Length: 242
Image (tube, rainbow, N blue to C red; front, side, top):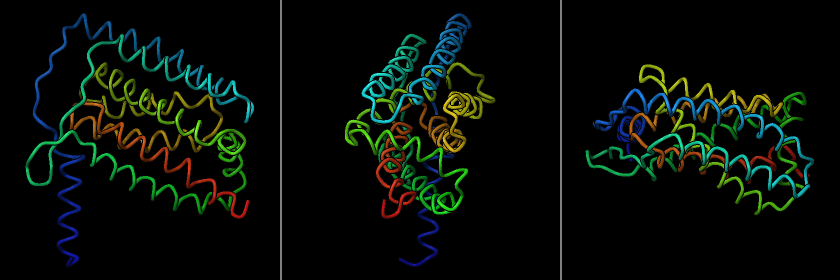
């Protein structure tokens, strides 16, 4: 395929998946918006503390799985109690409509590629490499496939809450950046700076999808693609031959 054609295809894809929102009308009463904000605020505080405690569990300890699933339960209950959530609907490059799942997978793969390339740099910096390895120890010393299942459950829960409830609770002028900053802030108790940086990057991507589609399905697809890719592919880069 000629290079100009490839460029046009990529531009059309990015425009459809991240730029052009689908027209929709969803009105919330001031009372329902206020209720959603209260639920979001309480859930955010409880969930952030619970996440910090879960990540502090010693690698290999079965308590880690229960603690992490507990965090997922907090995000999910908070999202569902806050008010209505929507799957969303996006554009395709040819002007049709889709749920945005394939777009989400492709965007997740793109973000994963960027992070894996960045990991080659992180691998040379012990100050950054150490905390990330500590986080990955849960997969190295526990059951990788159980950690993968927990990762899927937690990823879905995070998107339901942050791109569902939190996004909907904020003013439309800053709900994208606001939901991203709150998502990143929820990881601060983890003590892993690169996890917070990752939350910022993933949050910006999925918030753009949320803006376009009006729902959580596309963001969930991106989140799971990125997080599972990092779980399986990042350790070999940071621990070559180990």
